Length: 146
Image 1 (tube, rainbow, N blue to C red):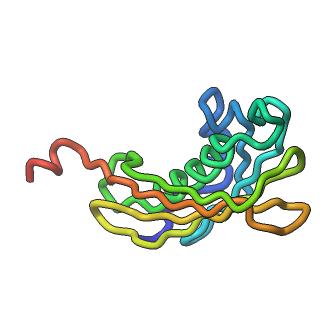
Image 2 (image 1 turned 120 degrees about the vertical axis):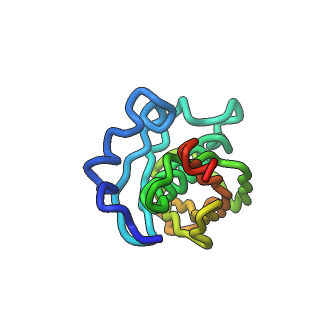
């Protein structure tokens, strides 16, 4: 699969407005063949009650980057996708700063895609999490009957 011509940074900039990615503040900084770059400023409301970064915040950033990567690389004729599995390994945490995320494909098929993401602490340049998800490609009803 190659990058779809309609998958642009401008198009992705506001796709999440009013939805979870927009609510938590995910920003896209790069859309390219086999790569999506995103970032997120850490704010107090994204922390867990213990004062450290909530795991769900990291997962939301990584899953969003991988999801947009899947959208950007959908096979011709596919309608959409849905996440069927995800996994995350946490290597550290933060209380402030910025998270950066790079998502890259491991497998780009007609039925599934598998994406990996690395989430980093921007200031220190260290990994915060490793993430992997599997996306099920959704086809129009007419394509499923054929």
